[in-house]
Amino acid sequence: MTALPLGGMTPLSSLRKYFWKYRVRFIVGTLFVVFSNYFAVLAPQITGFVVNLVQQRLPGARPVASKPVHDVLVHRFITWVQSAQFSFGWLIAVCSLTILLLAILRGIFMFFMRQTIIVMSRHIEYDQKNEIFKHYQRLDTNFYKTHSTGDLMNRMTEDVSRVRMYTGPAIMYLINLVTLIGFCVMNMLRKDVSLTLYVLAPLPLLAITIYFVNSIINKKSERIQALLSDLTTNAQESYSGIRVIKSFVQEKAMLGFFTRNSEAYKKNAVSLARVEAIYFPSMALMIGLSTLVTILIGGVQALHDSSKIGLIVEFVIYINMLTFPVSAIGWTASMIQRASASQRRINEFLLTEPTIANLPEAQQVKVSGDIVFDAVNFIYPHTGINAVKQFSLRITKGEKVLVLGRTGSGKTTLAQLLLRFYDPQEGKITIGGNDIRTMDLKSFRDQVSYVQQDVFLFSDTVRDNISFGLASPASEERVTEAAAFASVHKEIQGFAKGYETMIGERGVTLSGGQKQRISIARALIKNPEIVVFDDCLSAVDAKTEHVIIGNLYRYLHDKTAIIITHRIFSSFPFHKIVVLDNGELLEMGSHEELMAANGYYAELYRLQLTEEKAEV
Ligand SMILES: Nc1ncnc2c1ncn2[C@@H]1O[C@H](COP(=O)(O)OP(=O)(O)OP(=O)(O)O)[C@@H](O)[C@H]1O
Image 1 (cartoon, helix red, strand yellow):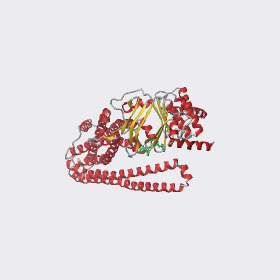
Image 2: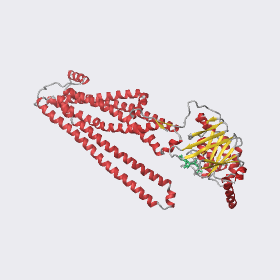
Image 3: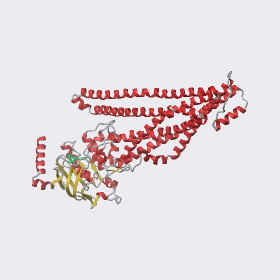
Image 4: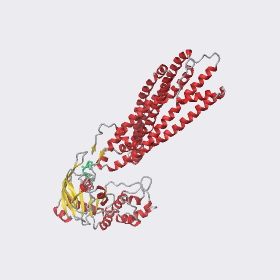
């Protein structure tokens, strides 16, 4: 497994391809943000103008000392209303309606801003999930052995949604806060530089405070998330293992365990609530401080220049408008940090290349049944266990080979090497003279069937489980034929819904032997050249096994088959019997040859015979 270096890029830069893909949405969304904020900052100027008008009409009003500067649009509007000779009442009404109109315009643009940017983030999320899932499918067995399922799931769900918080809300708020702060500050500076500086002074403090509080909240939330995940795993295990718990009378112990986990969760949640409780009051304090400064300094100025009264009102509105964007600075920064950490984890996976992959010169070859293991040596990379040692074996097309050996002797490993779940470090495996590493992986695996030791069936119908490996839907006859060869057809017919019966958590509970035989049918329907059965009859009794093997033998007449087992099927003529011990070839030959050699096989055979007699 090779994880490529990230080459100095920041993790989030791997999202560039998505931003490029959705560039139109992104640019249009940004324009909507700009428009929405532009209209937002026009309203306070009109309010300021109206306040000044009212102030002028108050008894004892002092003349205006300076003319406030306005935005081009506002300036035009003011010139228009002043020249239109409205009565005072009408003037106020027109101004109010204009403010309402501006709010509506802002709202419309905000709606479009969400429609473009948030929708873009959902598209990116969808693409990213597909990209990760597609990559997961390429990765090899060793990868799955070294990563837990929970970890893989987390990257698909938790990490992707954190990245979405960046591509959607965080970017939207970032653009929003930059433009809104830009417009507000520009307007404020245009009107009164020194007042602006006084008013804005507490705001950076607010941003920093919120950033820190946010980091604490995030850390605590993460801890809570982890505890919650522990709690769920705990509960889930208790439900699935309920029979074990009950039979060992461990209900109390499990309850104690759950209560302790639950207690830790509660403690952290309470402490988070405490931090969150400080959040809003501290924000209100800072805003209050800014407003106070505005009124104080603006008030002193207004004593000399009455046009400043409108200005104070305008500034107070700006400060309130700035509250949200400034507090969003801290929030956005911590969102970006979290997204970056999540994207780094996702990248680690995406940049992991499978070690079992097609060579550039890989060819689609028709698999013949001639298999040669040539001095194969294999060590499990992550544990260092040497499971197969200098193993050589020649199997001719059509041969049926029995592989025996104590538990842990390397039988499964041998089958997995043949299927190319792993590649041997030394030696090679050839089929029809071609090294399997030079064959196209997909076409190779399509022609070889492997019935695994630990059966896995999907939560689907019996029919779909059997025809799982086929590219197109299988005909009724094909499915029933495969089931009949696997000696499970009659039992399936006995189910209320026959082949349409659902298997899995919400379906019928199959016996171990039924599951094994359905998985055999799944392997046979592919009509492969080579079939490997890995201890797949362990859950049936000796008599049933006899019948099954008889049926299988008829199916296998022209195929090459490797049958891994703990038990000797003495009534069937195997061309070769291979005995493994500690990864090495211990004995090999026909039944007669091995009986004559009087070794492990002969001993096992005699033992089994005595057992069978005792059973009868
Ligand atoms: N995925 C794995 N990673 C690391 N070591 C493994 C792995 N699978 C098996 N081994 C080790 O390799 C050795 C051979 O195991 P293998 O499963 O091939 O034996 P087996 O003969 O099939 O045993 P059994 O009859 O119990 O299925 C054992 O020592 C086992 O612990």
